[in-house]
Image (cartoon, rainbow, N blue to C red):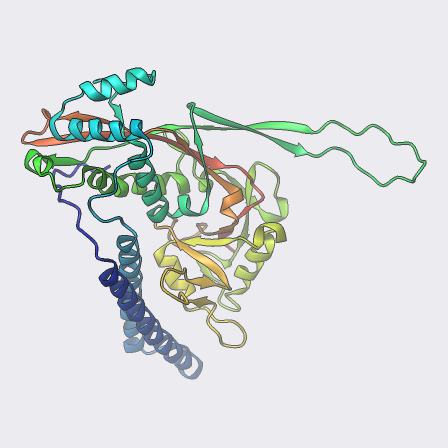
Length: 420
């Protein structure tokens, strides 16, 4: 939740300079990875000749590894910033109602005048509108918030997203298909068994943020209120969503995929996620450490594997960067160009800081087709309630959206467990 009482006007972006900044950040990242690779090769050579690496080399590698993480974060940040719209967006000309809503919403945010929004939402028969429940933001603002969340919320970016109009989404699935078989041209066709159906339910839970602004900022006509609101709530929403989609317990929040029942892949059954063990408690195996990653990849069926993604946090990715295959090539490779993800064994890597660190028995790496495996449901509409009284001289904007999530295909995601 963003409870900061500080707000700043959004910056105007210049496209050529933003592109140059992205290119510069990418070049810095590539140079840092080259230095990391050289230092790690030196460390491995010392292990082969001395049975232990030099302390100075270890410190050098750790320092470069931290610099590589910093370069990656800077590259991600400038890429996100470059995609943000400039100030003064084009008004809604095709839809007079949308333009009227935008104008009324702008007046409400700046001065608290709600008569226009009351009239519009009364016309639309919008349930729950009014001073107590807040008012719906314009559709353009809602789309902007969701698009920014998709860019900075790692699991949302790779999962399926469905917009619903009710408070819950239900989906039926078959736990056992109908009986089938081959028959001759004139042979009898016995009646097939009925499929066994079960139901998955995805309730939309309420998520809120409370950005603040001074009245002076709101009175400044040059400030794009729509863009300011989207930028203020995006990080707060993305932080809460990211944690919930990974490990949320499903109580007043979405259920994360790591909250599912987990079993050894050899005993997998629907309703649980299968895992593969590394062969060592809290670490990769001492010999052939990358073999468990190969086992993890091929634990996933081919139909899911072609669109699969690795998900791990920054510290786990740091450990994976040091792994090589039998030919001496690094399994982890940096992005081939700005805007592309790093890869592990040719599969994209998504960095999710809410994934657990490597520890005994931890499920620190996930691999799967998250588009088919995890579903995010968004209740249509983002509401905002203006509060000029609780934190004078600041004006608070109590902003809410309803979102849910959960595993929708238990066969599409596999986990790596750091255990023997």
